[in-house]
Length: 223
Image (cartoon, rainbow, N blue to C red; front, side, top):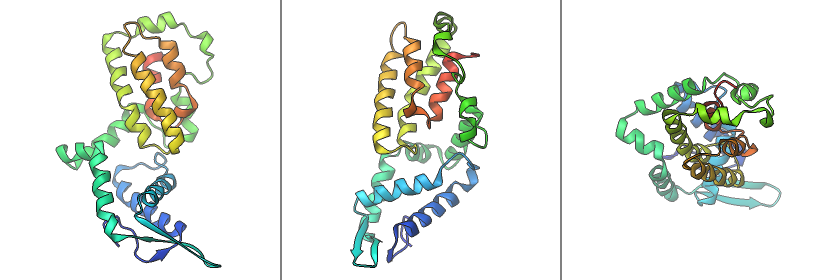
């Protein structure tokens, strides 16, 4: 094993992804994220990043198929670069190990996350079963006071990091980030167009981003 907990020698992709998945599962075990984090998707995403960064060497042999091997010389540079870019890691370095525990506990509490995310999407989305044409946008606008507006702005600023850490494909992430940037600009308007903001949030690119559902709940209140 190396600094990333990856096996040495030549292995199939499925074998390496299985090791990555087990490492994620062991690392996240103290945070009780059963049903929240898709470990298979995380393992697949990390494998792709390792491959794109040349940390994994690909070798295909006739009849035998394709194998992958870790280039140990590139493991530490990859790890250092990834940690340097991670805002969560920087916060943990300042606050200490408890940061992750507090983040996950707060995250689960704020969105009142049920065990099964798939079965709860309609519960999380306040627009489920409601036609947008039925929403009284003037009432919605009046219900958003300065304090609530500031809370919404703060949560919107957290959208992009949430998208980057999500299970979306790279193409979906780019689309979702473009939407998030548009929402950030709209919410800064003197009179934010809440109907447009809700329309952007209630989009297929945000279907896996729980932060977006939490913002929708804040905007639409008890609808």
